[in-house]
Image (cartoon, rainbow, N blue to C red; front, side):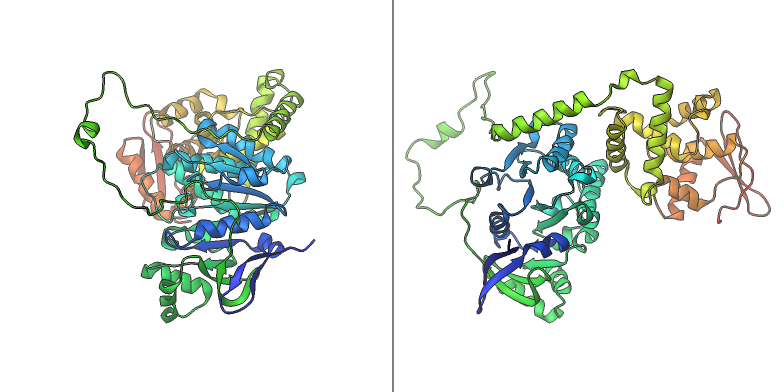
Length: 487
């Protein structure tokens, strides 16, 4: 079977051919301002590969749900499902090799990021036996991998950015080939964009975006002006799956139509009625304008298949109630320690660690809801402090956790780490260890955190004549031995 697909025509030459096998190994980045033809390009790519490879589409505007009729994609309306259900759907779609459109239309930015992260997390954490090739298309990728914090919550941004980073940086070995499209390269996280080896750059007007596009394509800055002159549907292509030198291609026609293709210019006829009475008429009380909610039922055969698979997993898994509580706590602690001990476990956000932890719990037969997020954060703080499950049952540690519960969640691991060192009679931890517990490489931030804890009358810091630091816990009076803060 040939893996070459035709994307359109090279301007002034022959057909523009893309090698699908190479694309699956090297990923693709599409950039262009609104109206440049990005969605048309993605639709062409999806149609040409619809019968060749499994597809997963993260669709924030509902543009690609029309693929379901022509190519039997399963449309999942994210507004009707919880994050846990979407994570399970991400796993099951890989098990059953079903192409899926995750429709995020109608959700606010925070919920879009959370639910896209859950779905991508499920696809990423599937067992090795189901690492089949999947083309993962993310439209408006700057929403899910922003270069800077916006108005969404930090937790949602970290979860979404972590999922996108996993897709582009670590997804290849798991069969996930990321295809990301963005309006603004400057708004897309650099570590996500940098993992793509193939590029299709469309019409762009802002200088900063043109400069980044030119850098990615290996063009000189003075050549970047050419991006302003591209016609709609024309893209400059470069990459091992496309061509070895930058070439301009015109994207070919598509068979399906977007549900939101935009308004069409038509003759305007002003109304003849008294519009003031129609528009400004008072609303009857308590009646409100009812807006019908759109529902797009997915194909029943795939839904039945996924539901049957979920029931089979639930029946096969051992019941959590059958496990001895003490043994269960030991197993949960061991799984949590495995998550933390991974190469990047100390610097991953709690939401990403939580998804990894739940997957390990299901594999171990401890159930899909082994711990809720709040309990997981407390257990994570205790584990990072170095406290064993047996030591966590002592009255002293219960007192330490009671003090920690009054602090912000991100500060609790730092305080518990100091409390553990004081209870064990160890030296005061150096700044680099405190930074690692917090999840950063910055020793300056570690010193600021210690200063904040001292301002809140939680700890007292003292330096001796040799510059060594002691930390005492206010209240219980526990105190560490003197230690060098700069080690």
